[in-house]
Image 1 (cartoon, helix red, strand yellow):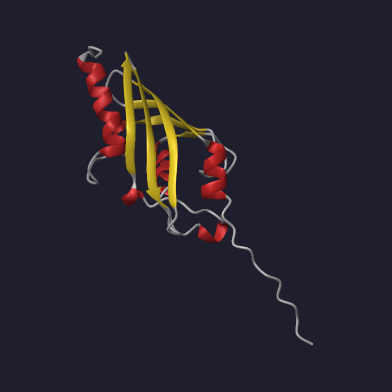
Image 2 (cartoon, helix red, strand yellow):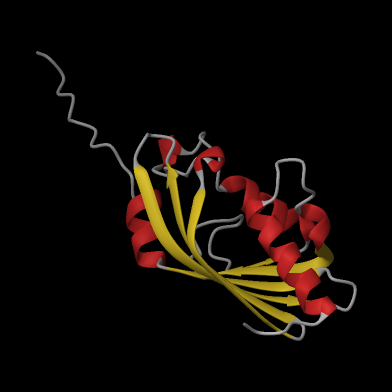
Length: 160
């Protein structure tokens, strides 16, 4: 078992709280105001096409978008935040960096079971705030499962 410094232990605890903390935990407060969240799937976030989401407002929009049900009409079947479970959690720290890998299981707004493996590499500053977070996951699977969810609209021929 590795021996972690107090700073590394604090950073590990903070990152674990981001995912598994109670609902009242201040997830926004753990980010530096100019933090960046990198996500390799450029179809999420606003505007689409970005992979680096800079600043608190962009990070809040990215985090809250995961649980939104109002995008089903756009083919987006987001997962319901209250159904998330984490398995096979591995957390390692080295100085200002913490790496967390986990399997996430959850239900989507349309009721399907979602499962994907995520790995986060997070850089903290000396005050214990997240300054840069990279989110690695099976984006091909997420694209197919969460974002390409179109219901086939049948043709409606005009009656003569």
